[in-house]
Amino acid sequence: MVATYLLVRKSRWLLPAMALIGVVVGVWGSIEAPTPTATDTGGASVEFWRLLAVGSASLPVLTLSSPLEALEATGGSSFHRLRSLVLCGVFAISSGCILTAAAVGVDAAVTPLIARALLAWFGLALISGRVLGWTYSWILPWATLCVLLYWGHSSSSGDFHWWEFTAQPIGHLPSTLLAVGLFTAGVAAYNLSPWRIHRFRRARTSQAGAH
Image 1: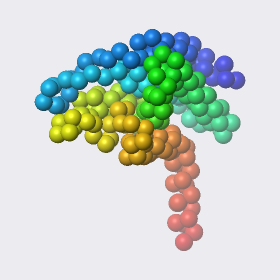
Image 2: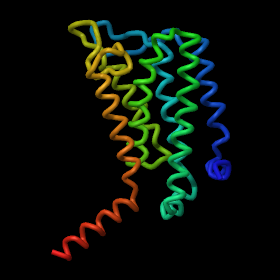
Image 3: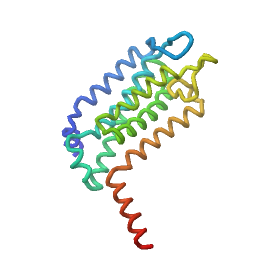
């Protein structure tokens, strides 16, 4: 059933893409790339692993995109459980690829930072997919990354703003809470499917009629 589910989505490229991200992070993850910033210097450097984490977290959400999406929306609870199982499994595989590569090729100390970022990017991808359609689930994470890279630096202190969750140390509580909050919001958006909204409205209407 899982193979058939993925076949409809033409998802054979997903695993190679996840593995490729892992290879790039393992070999070149510590290399810094110049990026423009809204600071006095006008630029800064960012490690590849910070850039590629958004790809690892966005790829699993693309398993929700399907040419039969309208038909699948009417599926029963068994189908939705399968869809959720595949989503969680692919996210675990994708996360494992980049975290293992970072631990081996970069530094084990960055793996908690990547794990925190993965939660936030995954949540943003789910929100983006629910609002824009699952095919476009990558838009909000990548747009957010551009915002973090450009405006995430604090000009006054030379450090990062509290909301730059890809750069703050793992002990930075506000960034961790933000990442967990985005993940929770994404899971809530994913579960807020059209049929659940319809069922909720029907229940509210029935309650109102009873009163």
